[in-house]
Image (cartoon, rainbow, N blue to C red; front, side, top):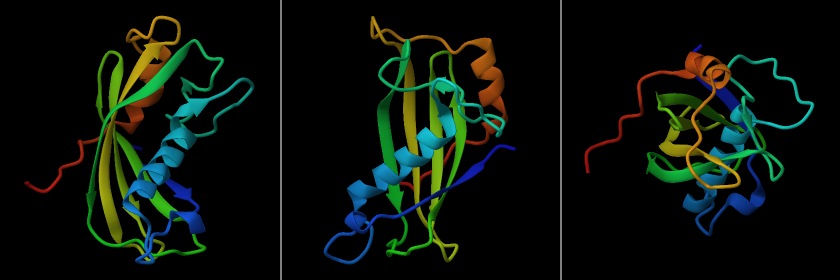
Length: 153
């Protein structure tokens, strides 16, 4: 299963003066896809393997924090009423962290951006890293694939 494709609607507010999705708004598109795949809340049931396995929201015992993000913009992403496809997978699964990799695909099929987010699971009370449970690891492992490779700088 390795990769999941998440349709993410674009908002008119995502556009900049040049008529394409602003670089900062791209992070919001990634966030929307990440939340759709990983977060769960009370009473939610997932029908997709690997999805909705990390507790989310203000009342949960653990939080997932972004420790680092990197984006490589490959082409402008113009506004469309059709959703953007965000392909998402895990490039590395550590004890309390994971590397979420993404490709943002325009409604026409062009890869417009590649990105990676280092996410750390922490205890909500102490802020210290909290290891993934066996159940969480088992649910996340099907999403493992090679990490994103960025162009040389």
